[in-house]
Image (cartoon, rainbow, N blue to C red):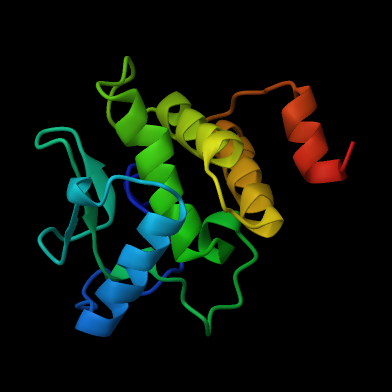
Length: 157
């Protein structure tokens, strides 16, 4: 099982060292969603995650989707922009979290709030983020009731 505070899933390996061109691309993604670029560090930690201990968002190779994977899990399908949004609008903006690291509710909120509050996300990424939030609850054995925002993203009404 992967640590739920990390991108995890069938994404590119966290051991992939991001190239300068990939980092520049990711910085453009950060700017596109209106995030504070100074909060992000690249290739400094082993995985993509919000680092509560340092107040930074670590970006590693697993921020990138694995384009050869056949997975249909939303965590595997979301773009690097959506992963960055999950960390920034979901974790960083709610730090310190009232939940323990790895608590499904922290991860649910991170994906939900990223889907709801991130500017310049594609509808497909909003869908993946909402689906990820739902999966986090399901993986924890919790049932949730869809609200109007979730229904509008998933079903268009």
